[in-house]
Amino acid sequence: MDYMKKWFDQMGEIFLIDVGIEQNHSVIDFGCGKGTYVIPAARVVGAGGKVYAVDKNKESLDELMQISEKMGLKNIERIDVPEGIKVPLQEESVDVVLLYDVIHLVGNRKKLLTEIYQVSKPNALMSVYPKHHQEDMNMELDDVKEEIESAGFSFERMLYKTLMHNNYLEQGDILNFRKQ
Figure 1 (cartoon, rainbow, N blue to C red):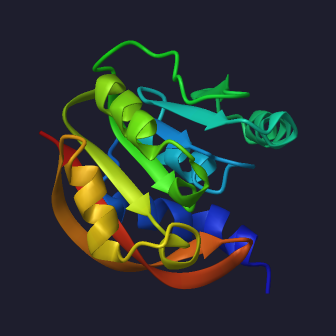
Figure 2 (tube, rainbow, N blue to C red; figure 1 turned 90 degrees about the vertical axis):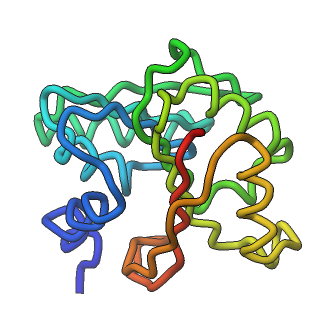
């Protein structure tokens, strides 16, 4: 079965709507890779919204932009961040931040969370899928929540959802936070 086709045809949009993304939102997908969440997010936010595809891998971003062009999606903006975590966006300009299967790869999570806090609008949603928290971060889910809360976000809810990971569908815990 082609899980990616199923994801891009419908499942991804349903997932992101359930998480809290709405039409006309501005969304950052930090560590977006080839666009597993960027493509469905661009569809959900529509022409009045914007999705910022942030990654350090130039080839992945190149591929994502080729796919988005073929699909006619004009509301995706690529942001290359080669070394470091600086997101070149205006303060308080983003409605939603996605951190899916990436937070364990960030060496300085405190700096990342500070950066996200700055670009997030008041009451912005930050949705986190901490897939590898136990192995790579040596942290339990409660520790991940505490770390994010200490950066000025309040825990809103946890969702147990089917999502895409490494081209396969799997079940996982999504943690949603709001900027205080």
